[in-house]
Image (tube, rainbow, N blue to C red):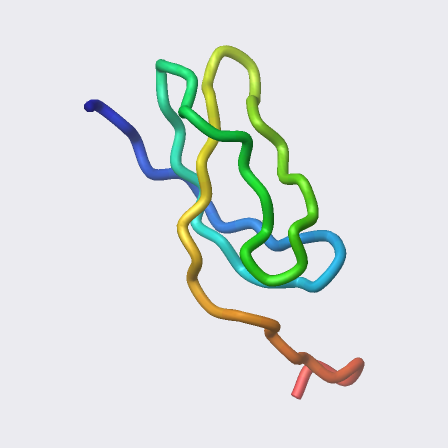
Length: 65
């Protein structure tokens, strides 16, 4: 299976951080957040997307500290 690694993304609901992996064939399951079960984008252009968990619930204060 050939896949190219892409940038990071976060769940829009719980902010769990994922590495996006692009594929040329459709994955067997629709991607969902492992923390809150929010649906994640399945495709971008001609690429199918899957997500690799980086870390759960990143907390950053409004001051950035």
